Length: 396
Ligand SMILES: Cc1ncc(COP(=O)(O)O)c(C=O)c1O
Image 1 (cartoon, rainbow, N blue to C red):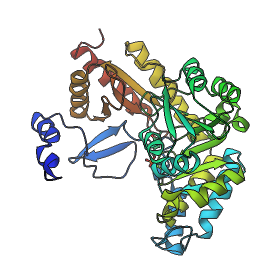
Image 2: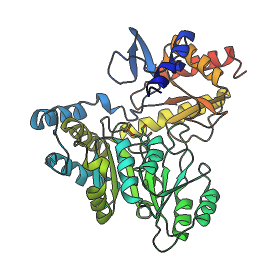
Image 3: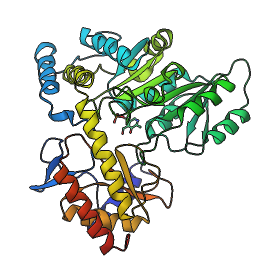
């Protein structure tokens, strides 16, 4: 059988395109900002993770430009051998101080950070325990490790306890629990203090993916652990640069000896080229801004609270979202696509989300907010959601 037969048989995307309900790979003709151009039309962007709006911040862009000029467009190799530039180490020192951990290692993407950290830490005799709704990169990091993988019900501390109690452990088996700090589709926060207590009971280590929490949660945007005041008790903090940092890459933060181990044992880190200089420069610029301009985070939360109240007052189901990721949970997949299409026609860009990205029966419109959205744009969004929600019978 030809290994490409499945490709010839694959017609899901063609069917969706022909039906006019294909939402993926939209061609954006402008930079990532509060509005974007698609097909020459300006749309309000509610589908990005540019939470602090830093893609357009002059200082972030200037630092990216400077790094490009000084260090060139590529490091042309792995950190281990020939791509370890002093700006990588500068960024690692700055981030360690920012999140409150001894050491940091930066990777070229957030996805790679999860792959490289989990596969390095979880060995053949170990266990890795994850929340069912964890990000795909955590699932794939588990697959890449040789450990035994167990899952527990989403954000369910009792479920975590039962799972840990059921593990067949011995003196050679360690346990790593991995959760998202903020869940990427529904915007809810992991109950870290309760999870830490359970992990301690079973001698398990805890890793928190802060992709959607860095720059957003915590007194200065340090993330979920700082939000709860439990940074000491979270063993590994992971973050991405592709969201609030307005760049590309990822980091893992923890005790110096753990980070040094990952540095020397993580295949996705060792056998891949170093983070590009311009991306490092943008991150350094974003850190400067996060440390000195709290107004962006404050504005983000002002918009978030306003939109959460606005949608709830209209009668939409937002689940337990408590962050700038606000899902409009519609349940039915076809309804989600119909709503998405009407929003696009009315000039609003959102992401329709269906299983397996969310559990069956929980299809939703993922909306997310940024500090650079204006009040007028948000008025327009609420007015449009109300109109289409009534038109499609979602609200009365
Ligand atoms: C929770 C979570 N972890 C990891 C990643 C991967 O990060 P990146 O896109 O920066 O590779 C994402 C990105 O979507 C994410 O949402």
